[in-house]
Length: 470
Image 1: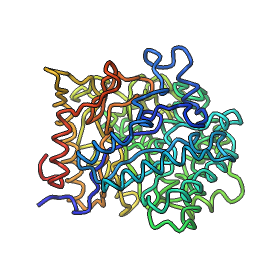
Image 2: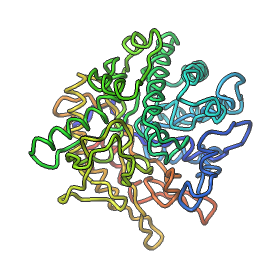
Image 3: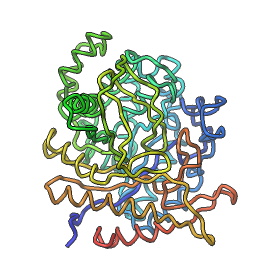
């Protein structure tokens, strides 16, 4: 008997900027990524999302492949500037029509949409007003969310507000590797606070929208393991947990910041600054579920050369983007390579047990919150042999992580769905198209032709058997 409940949502995920293309089609406004990726030297070989894999024009073909795969659900993001070119105000009805048609096409194939409202592509017009550093951006986000609820809420039941705050704030405002390319931890923390405010206010709007559904938040799940049993390494690991987990999960699941870290941040930098009513807004508008994006764990050691923050780590994580040590005061710890670890071509440790451990860590701290694994996958340069994309390493990776989810369910975790990253090979942010994640290969030498990989047939059987065949 399968460990997975009968209504478990087997899906896959993508994000708007990484798949859609049509960057200026039919009235769409520019995003910060449209501007940033055109700057010389910002991305691998100057790749950008102008065309991406042209999902904007080929979504019916792609959804047909999703249906063939047997997907029960599809997690995708909406492009804010496609719907509101200036970030607020006049609605681009052509953008509304695109997403409405996409949703209808999914439902025709019995695929449940899961919408992410923000996967990093802030309208450029709002960035020019100050971006996430100014509170008016949070207000504009709520206007955008209300528009989406009104136009799509009759057909979409699963929503999340933001994807991976640790990355788009960390790389946007500390390492400078992503737009808006700032390097200032104080500005990062204030911007992060406005994201949490935007989330809470959008949850409040959802509650009054009349939608029969649920709304959540998607965070990186990055469990930490101390390098040794030495007290200083254990303390360093606990501090890393505070920054990378508690700071990012507590506001959306507990409705408040971890008190000690908040006091430290405000003593050191005077941020985040709260507007009147912020504390109540966070407290009264917590998530219905949490989305977990898991790729790897980190091994943590005490830092023998402490600094106020460390933005020079060159490892990578998530959906193809570079990871710095993005967030907060880092002087007490550093991330180190595990000498016994197995690593990908992009130097991420493959450690499926970390997914079980991480899920149970979330359950222990936050109770029986519903969980969706909203991203999990292997980024690689897939081999093509005799015309077939033989991604056996991806099959092995996903098989192990599905087993890790089954173990967490057997231990009592309420995991309701699994969305491997990604349905189709896509633009992997700074890595361009060299890093592949999908079940479907895109041939950039043959007009973006789609091709099913070996993993496609494998995942098809996993879904059909509700996880028994893996």
